[in-house]
Picture 1: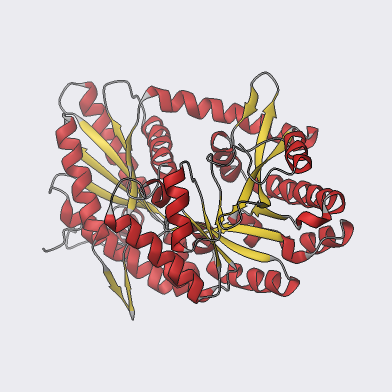
Picture 2 (picture 1 turned 180 degrees about the horizontal axis):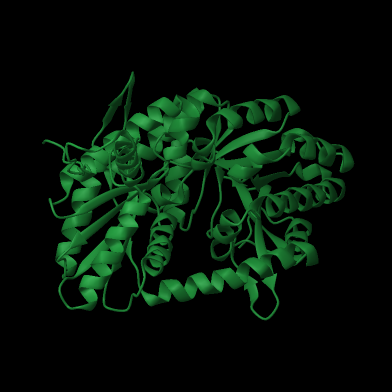
Length: 462
């Protein structure tokens, strides 16, 4: 399919002098972005203002799509900016070809594209446009020696007569695309007022989170790791909770995304690291015969933006901990976000002696490559696959068996997350899974309940 790009053409009289030609050339340069050939941000905002004026007169309806590529930063980090630029050009080319002639496609900068689609007045029409966007972006890209696949998160704003300026649409579209990204890859969200209200709540939450760090309002709960063979407790995973004044206990899914967005995830993550090591040190002295391990989640920015190796070295010495009893849990997306920095830091952590665990395995899009690139000690199977083991899907059983066998061949221990019933437990044990975690054994519990459990010498929490 041939591509269609907007090109600014200005009629030039024969008498045009060099100064006039230079002025026109500069106007063309500013109205169209040189990397993709699409209209630039300023030109798009001008078109959007015109659309608002026409809509106010009852002459047109429109929607705006906010398109953000999933995982684009990893391309620049791992393959270089030249490949990244080629990808952006190709995405722009595909989007322009997928849209109708009257639609305006623009490159808003970085990995963000915008579409102004006129005369779309039904949810069916919106869905049709979104499907065209997803299909155009998801086809494989041949860039240099690489064959890549990508998806995009999309936010949609419907002009319903309540917008007066382009900035208001940009604000709401940004909220919608952020919401789409929190739901996972290749998702879309149509803006509604509840999203704006939630964004305002999160804005207030940011200030409260900063205070929470200063006032030490966070607590850790601990969920047991159970040996599937002996059914004994072999360790715990440390899980953060926020005891927010006036609200009570706030779960991590309700505040971690705010912390990530506003640069607070590193100090919060470092607090978890310090508190977790302190607690494991106390348990190791009180219950040395149990040989407990502790899993601690490490966020991507902790890998790329902080001295996690230096911090952990100090904590191991301070609390007299065996490094091998610390299991740092890192998600696939955390590695993909910055693979170069991750490789250096993870090699240093391995030299320190800590155990590295790849968390939520199977939920990302480059799982196998990460197993070979990074020397993980532990593989945690994502709870989604565990939940399907009892649904009589042969493919789920085969998939989990294959993951376990692959991990064993690579010398890794396997942890199954989200075990909730005896049948899942039995099947995983038969497959050779080492460790289980889930509500079948215990929900996460505060420190005082952990102490009662350990002193009772129960094999499995109930």
